[in-house]
Image (cartoon, rainbow, N blue to C red):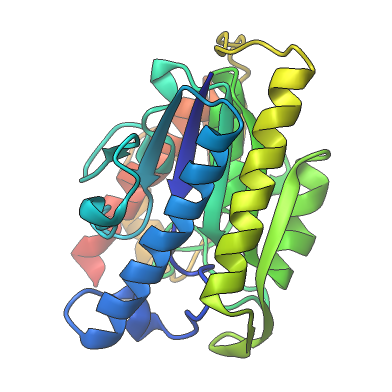
Length: 277
Ligand SMILES: [Zn+2]
């Protein structure tokens, strides 16, 4: 029974400031270690209940944050970019369960370091009329591959906005947001304990319920994606892509054959946005 863990950094206990999420400084070096240890707690919990394979996908920035030599040696690590399925790369090899840890609230909410995929580019992302954060966007991709999102962690704003999207999933709240860069954190050690216990429980439950150890791919459903971008200059740039429709100054729309195609399109637009930085 295989688990794929997607690990981001903004929702990790102790992380409040953008500096802690950017390479090249001491605060980041501390934060990436906490991120790695939170991933490790989930890995160990999954193996403790009978997972036979655990992959961890480095899901932040350049996808090169996790410190592999601190990770449980039984886990395999998905690193580096660009890669086709982004924060969910690895799911195409058939994970039964997905964990999303260290995640954050969607753009323009009150969560700590809230954004959706690319804070410079996107103000709002909606699939088929429903506004989504990264957990919702990548959750749609995971489900298309037949995987179930079973465990998520991040701040209280993330948990509250994401819970309705994944009924039955377990949430670990790592900290309470009081602003974009402020709040009250649980200690990293207590969050690791909670993640270990939650991972252990959801894997055990999956096995006890006799659910399939391997995912079967679901039929892809079309996605109409509506996108609000941060500036009209970005909208001008993105609309060079012939399949995008301009709705207004900063709103765009495109149709995708599947969640996978929608995610890949968003990641292409995100890469294009670097032209205007
Ligand atoms: Zn991130």
